[in-house]
Length: 92
Image (cartoon, rainbow, N blue to C red; front, top):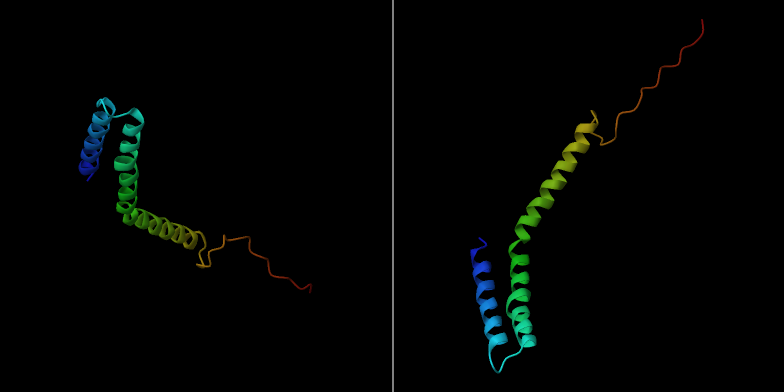
């Protein structure tokens, strides 16, 4: 899955090197090229591609939390069981 972003970063790195080593280029131009053609678009694409995985992880965490809360209380109320109260005895 990550072969395309790695290849794209290689191409952008080569573009930046060509910009930096060109007689008419500059190091600042190479940095701008690397940032605008590489880092910025790639970070946006990877963020968008990772959205379904983050959504699944969030739902799994919520389901695990709900399961842990319902398993903690035998009545399913989500509260921890406390001590029982003894019945009041009447004196004979």
